Amino acid sequence: MDETLRHDRTVRLLAARLDTLAVASMRVPGGERMYRHHILAAVAATRHAIDLDLLSPAEADSIWAEVAKRHPDAGWCRSGPRLAA
Image (cartoon, rainbow, N blue to C red; front, top):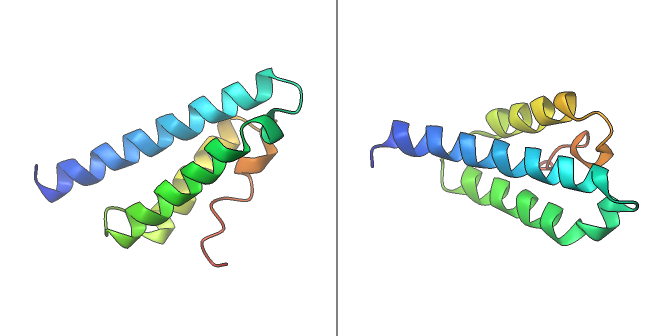
C-alpha cells in the first residue's frame, strides 16, 4: 500500500470511528461516561497515526473539528484529541 492510500485510509477510518462514537454517545444517557474508554482509544489512535506520520497534527485537528461540527451535542469531540498536552 503506498503512502497516499495509507493516508487516505487513515483519514476515513478515524473520521468513521469518531462519527460512530459521537452518535453512540449521544443516544445513551451519560454517554460520554459510558464511552470514555472508546473515546480515549480514539485519542490514542489519533496520536499513533501522527507518530507514524500517517496524519499531521493539523489534519487530525481538522478531522476532530469536522466531527464536532456534524455532532454538536457530542461535547467530547469539541475539545479535539488534546495533542498539545
